[in-house]
Image (cartoon, rainbow, N blue to C red; front, side, top):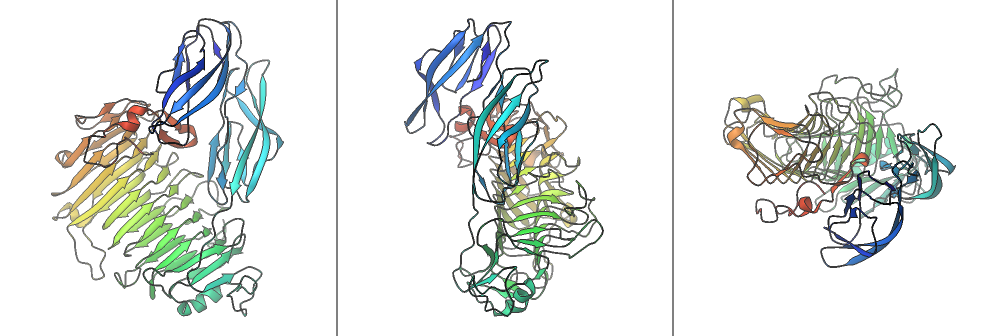
Length: 591
């Protein structure tokens, strides 16, 4: 445990993993320093009154009665003594090849600020340690790396401490085949059969020429570690329900890369993967890295055949970055402003039942980072991470217009965004997405378990186009989301405007941490606000009345806000609202 000083207030939060939360804490044996207490919440606090070294064991009991104990020790020094510096990070999370990684180191004692470095061994390839103690990047190879970290304080005669740590990186899963597999390798040959790893094709041009011959259940797998400087234009690729055609990967190492060729001096190719004309349906893109495309990264657009083409599209486990005009890897640290043209980097327009699952998107130029525009089925956007390695979006980060959509368990970091950019935005303007352009009365959208981090606008709904004057409406639910503005009191956490007749916006069991929320007069009577935590670590202000069952400024005790882990540990948060039948979740905020 971190050391303490006589007469100085002390706080340390215990943490547990596994079992079934919430946890109940107690002292199992030994004695805490005089003046400190350990309540069931696991937050040890108080003001030490005497010096000494103390050894004790703490116990955590989960909600099923399972128990775990751990031996701890800590020192209390005199009021005039310097607390020795020590690393308090006990272990580091594992990583996955080609998935964004971030972990923040912690220390106590000495004189802050601290400076961090690796003094022996090596971090996993693709990861770096900043002097501020943040390990971040994207692992490029599997394996376990062991290394020694040093933390040094800023005193005139600095103290230092070292500790051995390790990070285990696992390989990302390769795509599977339910039908015929075709393999593509940089070392292959287009005259090969392509049906085995020993006889692969070489180019995307071969795949494109062969696409009409792919049968439902077929897979085209690109070798991991390979780079293709081409564009895949899908014009005649048709799987079937239950037997999609998969564009995926095989082998080990980093995800296969489709590079659009954009540089600071050349536009390169427009897309990594695009389907905008011809016949295409039931296609899964699984585990592809896309970079340096000039207009859009991956897009499926069914304007000429909505309801027939663009059905059953899935993009999952992929990494899309440095795409959009002037957003390339050599174009500078931030992209150019939105050039116009509705150029979204992971994009579906007038599809049917599109799913965007577990993708990572950053360094995105153009318009929105992720867009679903008038899907006419039941669209799903889930498990995606936007902005971790480059926290900005030009227009909006995850933008949905029209249709019936579930947006769940996504994380958006927008700390570098402009003042009008939303992490999660939806707008309804009356166009149904069916070819021919009829209108429909209502958009239905659900936001569940999402996290907005330092976004100027967290969750924003609006009406536009013909909906500002005609009888169409938005039915939106916001359940168990976390909107974290930090100390930015001007940030809009929940914002709603131009609500038309028939609109309903239900906001319950969210953590609204900092910033403010508001809506115009047309929306006031259409909003339900209840069972939310109004202010977590930071106070928040509301444009309307607080709910009758709201919490007020209850600190969620996040596992680690500085590392992007906003899982709450406060048992008040993790158990609140069990009697609220409006949502099925017996807790507040995202988990």
